[in-house]
Structures are given as structure tokens and as C-alpha cells.
Length: 95
View 1 (tube, rainbow, N blue to C red):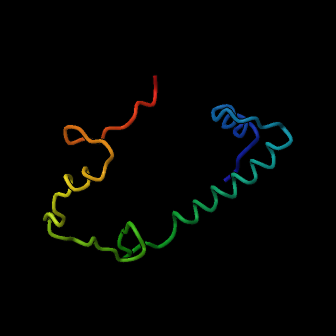
View 2: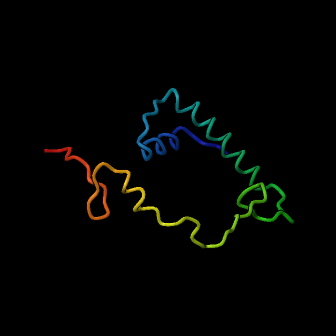
């Protein structure tokens, strides 16, 4: 695909990128190569290829939705230097 410097200037303006006239020619060549590669990829044979989200087979590990720990809040609150109403009491930081 052929990209001219006018197109590069317009793209640069839309993207709010500073591109001077000297680098516009180089950028046009690079962008043309990228678009050619995209065109080649679009023509790749995909017959019989299943769509996938990841190249490796992955499965979620399911477990029962059950409580596995007992309520230890009272024991943990007993370790605090100061606890009131089931909450940890901390010193005031901001005055």
C-alpha cells in the first residue's frame, strides 16, 4: 500500500504528533510496510482453525462454595491493645 507524506501529515495532526517533512518520508515507508504485513496476514488460510482465547488449554479449578474457616474474630480482637464494639481502636492520626 502506498502512503504519501500528505497522508502522514494528516495522521500526525489527528494524533497530535509532531512529524517534520524530513521524517514524514521515512514514516510513510514504515507505515506502508506495516500495512502490507497486515494485508498478508489477512490473506492467511484459516479454514479449519478454531477461534481461541489462549494457545494453551485452560480450565478453571472449581471448588465447593463452603466455609472452610471458623469465625476467629473474638480471638483476634483479644490480641489487640484496644478494641471496642468488635472493632480495633487505633490512635488518632490527624488532629
